[in-house]
Image 1 (cartoon, rainbow, N blue to C red):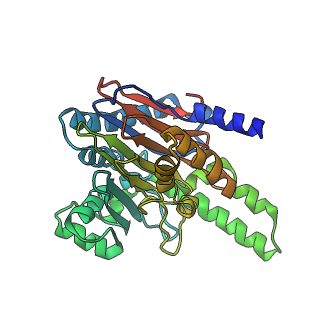
Image 2 (cartoon, rainbow, N blue to C red):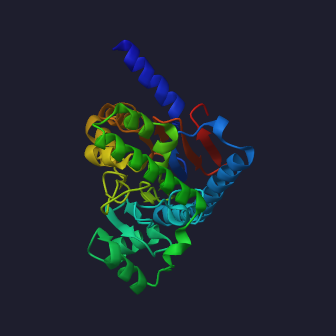
Image 3 (cartoon, one colour):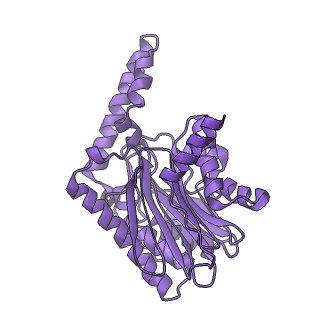
Length: 349
């Protein structure tokens, strides 16, 4: 047991960056661009630079708004929009494909000052789903709209709609072809009576990373308010109208000024079953844990125990934050009042 506790503590130290100060920073912004088997040996210098620049651009966007005194809600929306527009990430322009060859997008946003939230799921023509999610929060009495109804609402609100082909990228299409091939192998093995070979195939890092990814942001503004936003294309090869944790308040997205703001990334089914984002807040509220300990409990213990993986970013009301994950890497970064954007990709950073 002592060895296990030591290992968890070590993993938390490697996977997160927590900041503790006696005085709350004027504002803070933390982001992620998805967790998975992200290894430096598999990254070309040009690709690594592209990811670093993309994350820095997103941080700079949110930082500028927070510095000007804009709300945490404005900052997380604008930051996530930048990531949605970048084809490197599984959200917006870079969204992965469903089994039918469609891009179905999910997003959620939450205001920690009043616990208001909005979300959209399975939209196919909204360029920036995070803005549609905010419109749901502010312009309706609902929390989530899905599919064609969400798209009609977005159009009524004057949000930019695009032809579904806008979301196409060669990278995501190739990922779908790989996933379909893996499904074909699975079917063949089942017809032959079943084999552990398929499970091993699907557990290979490349196939796992084809399945999911997310972008998100959490922010603390000058007024002391928190906000969280998450956007995703979901899982490659997803079927039957599948929706993951990102647009589900309390699972992949949560914010409360009483505790923290959280945005998750990973295998959504497990995050839904554990209500990961809200559970981090509950551990802080009811057990008095700090944000790093609470996040580590979910990501380094509870999620892996069920067989899931992924990570999250969380920011508390005092400006303390963590970026914890149980995979080989997570695109992540933060920026505070000094304007120095810090970006990380690999576990060892």
